[in-house]
Length: 506
Image (cartoon, rainbow, N blue to C red; front, side, top):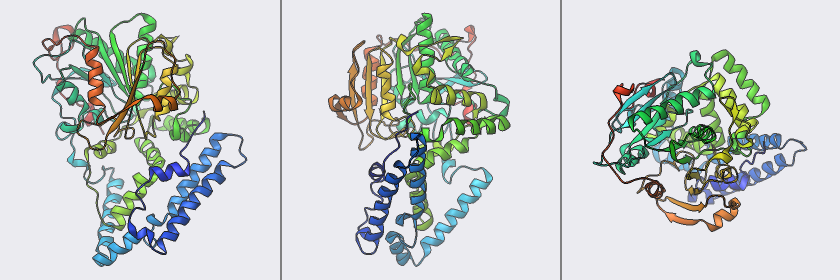
């Protein structure tokens, strides 16, 4: 499994801004800054030149070198950071007292298992996950939410969203102004979304087949009962998109024509180049995780969160510690950060299966992954497909997401948007400094290489959401009266208000 971690120059570009203050241009701080930059370059080159046959091990060495260098970075040390010196002089050390209190509060919260300071202000069903709707299906793994229409007429094709189960679904339904779900409802669509259960040790034996059955197939049956005769625009985010692609391929194989289109948001289907996340996934590390999961029954949320933080340690760990503990400036919590702190677990069996079948063996792309005992092939997909990658994604790198071009002959519109794995998707109209590229590959046409695609794709300013909405509109029928919420006579009564109960589980 080749891994292409960021090189030191790329790391410097990603960390642009950390040495922008004019104080870093003065002696001796300029000398320390330049020395750190040269050390980054030198240690990265040294690690990559190590006489190791396995490129994965060389990548791990380069990654480890970067982590150790951050301990010595001049901006992460109060004695070598001129901004900290200046602030301490201005405030007579009051910033350090505030920082000590911030560190003490964070330590207490972590010990008590509480979310980060300020996260409690974003409550599902109130400040976030507040789009009105109903729970119309509940099973062992998920609740199906149907959202109340806000327009007099809606498109006949409903939208069905399968989010990732790594985190809670409401990254797609944050605050009202940046909720993708609220946006789609406002554009005249009937929207359904899965809210995954937060598994416990009792769910240890749930596997990928269970996620397919309970998270995709049963919800599609419910949607068919509530909106009879309508084809469905299926949407998958992150691993939810991978799962949806498995289901769509099995449906194509079996002649099930209930889907009108497929939209994949930051979702990989070929894991041969998974990016830096692959540093934590090799046969040895997977075996260790399986041993731990065998005892617990699930994969702890803290480990996944820790891996993501290590991948972007300077932005997510060190810069925050400098601001909050050395400068005494507590950063205000926003809705996306609060959602990110609302982590979930994963059942032991499922987590082991997806690590081995997808990351290690790449079975889905190779046509070896089985559903109902028979392999599925992405080459069977003929649905109009809309695929989104994000420029700085460290979870699903856009070049990895782009590989769908070589696996499916379907007509495929690929969009590359600014931002990362989460912020690039939560990119509402009016969001400042947003742009995206887009290009459509007609059915059966050969794919461009990624660099050629970059050169050919048109660039647009603003959010990609209206571009997607226009794509959906072009594949939808004339608006008509909205369907009812639920279908009690067909076995799908309203079970409660959105966001439901599963999203509240800790």
